[in-house]
Image (cartoon, rainbow over all chains, first blue to last red; front, side, top):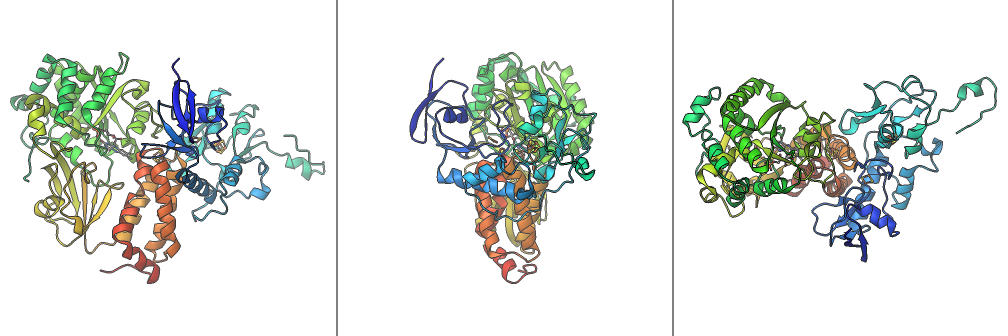
Length: 225
Length: 401
Ligand SMILES: Cc1cc2nc3c(=O)[nH]c(=O)nc-3n(C[C@H](O)[C@H](O)[C@H](O)COP(=O)(O)O)c2cc1C
Ligand code: SF4
Ligand code: SF4
Ligand code: FES
């Protein structure tokens, strides 16, 4: 196969046809943050955190889904790129109503990691919080969609890896939400105990339920996950 | 420059229910002529005419067709975008109501040129009342021997489904949301097959070009904007309606001379995601080189309030954002909330900086044209009517002029 030569951050690199900017960058040790992208899942291009500058392009482009073309000159960390990524992360944090210090996933949360890398502090945008009651009907998954960033990794993982297709997106704009059926709580009937979606969720929106009932009965709390 | 009826030639002249009246007005002659030409020659003619898309983006029509023609594969599609969701546009409705036959002829020629056997007309949900008329026009045209099968699909009432990739998702039965690009439709569109998608008005020009020749067509207009444009004029005007003007005609002619506007404060050109221009720019020519959009012209007179207009526009866009990508989903909401504050007279100095920063990020990072252009009313009004924002910071209450 023909090689495709491009320039990323001043380095001459070459990749094979069909390769995305992100793949080539990562292969060469250039880090571009991502949130909705996962190599095991189909491409989506939703979070826009991975945007990069391509010379001659009117807008920034999503590096996770844009294939390399001959002669492309790409900047992954230009001031324009960093500024834009920061605004996006800030927007996601602004509507996020999870209290991080009480979150199981606080130390492994990808949203927090990206925010830390980009040095985003408290968001300047005031925007209403995304609030949904916790769904804890299912014995297998607890869904706290107030912490959801709509990356749809759970939707795709359930469909493409677990082969179950339980989740879909409903509503639009700010009200967009990952739902089960016509927006009902996830229960035992719907889901088998595979944990795949939980492992794909970048935030604390999906987790293994704790067995709080046992604690109430005086037994010691055992966290099994 | 005067009004000139190329696209609307048959409107009010033929009976849209009866193809005989259309045939008597040179109907289907262009289609017959096209079929005597090689498909590549048809595309050459459209390219030479300099026809650009009338749905807003102004992409060269012939080039789009050529890309689809050259894309490998036997199965190709033509889509006519009749979603007409842009605020203040009703020109496609006027065309569909009065002359569905020319549109169908345009679709047939497009299908012949790119090698498609199947075409779709994606009809705006609110135009349901036109379904019977269109269905009848399609079947009458099929009786005349059109090879392409034309199917009408109704939308479900989403603005974003006018965006080409969301429209294709919708035809495929999915959620109406934009896809990432590339691939572009001429390479991989509907069901991942090569597809051309054109606005109603773009396709209306095709029979005229084929019948009269590219040279005839490209005589009118400016260097980069050939032919005419159909405008929908509404707002504070004495004579709202549909007007067809030669491209390059000044805004003044349309808004003041033809539509009879007085005491104009600003004009919103191209709908919710379009440009806002102050009265001082009333002599701007309407063309792809300057300002055009899909032909929506909303006129506001001096009694109107800038913040009110911009706030309502952003509220609409926040509501219509499909919610897929974060900059648009969260950004339109943030902008609408800030503007709501200005509307209540509770704006703050730092909000303006925040609006500008959001606008910069959204316009270059959103996934589709909706989110990219959503900040336009904000940035334009900040440029031309900044004092109206300032008044809502200092004094509170509505600005009175
Ligand atoms: C949010 C959004 C809404 C759109 N709505 C319409 C529409 O209602 N009708 C239309 O023809 N094009 C619309 N477009 C433009 C289409 O994506 C596409 O460019 C057009 O149909 C191509 O046809 P043309 O080249 O003939 O103009 C819209 C674009 C965006 C981003
Ligand atoms: S629940 Fe988790 S994985 Fe699913 S969309 Fe929300 S953040 Fe992404
Ligand atoms: S820009 Fe807005 S409408 Fe377009 S994909 Fe993103 S959220 Fe959807
Ligand atoms: S990682 Fe590329 S758009 Fe989300």
